[in-house]
Image (tube, rainbow, N blue to C red; front, side, top):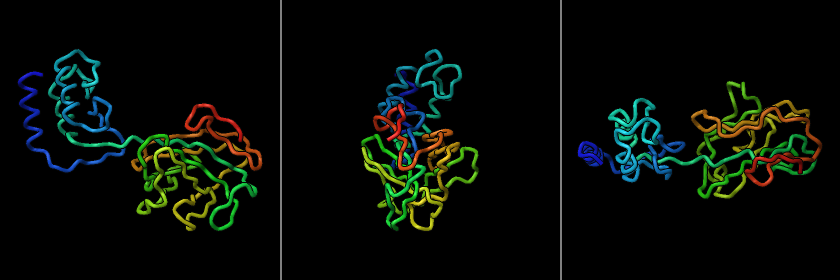
Length: 220
């Protein structure tokens, strides 16, 4: 690592605050894939200092690793992210007595699976049945006891068009005839996962990933 980078790094480290901001996903300056910008990333940055373009430390995508890239790393210093390890894992669009909610209704449902190891609160995220919809349903925030999915866990949300029944009830229904989308967005409006234009659904038959979080979809 050059003396210039070492000096700049010292300046960054001596002026940061003790708290670590948390981002919705991993910071762009996370160069060692641990989802936090710290000394390990600075070491990677130093090893690529003034290298040709294309390295992971080329954060601005212009003319290799330079002071402009260091400014990006410095701005993200000590920021921490959380990988959004969520997929739309299974859904049923023609529920006729197969599964009931707390009100005894056999509404259609969508299952979200957290394939990671850390819990994720989906409060504040968005779900929609139409990708072009400019007003998707927002999952209520502030009730993590209901909206947090543990690592390796599942959460069923009810597509019943009755959001007044609770945090897990969505403001739209699914069409058994198909032709709809199911899309999950993070709280910043970035797409997390999507089932696009699903086909006609059979009664009491769900459509899901096999295995969980896998790429193959099949009827259950």
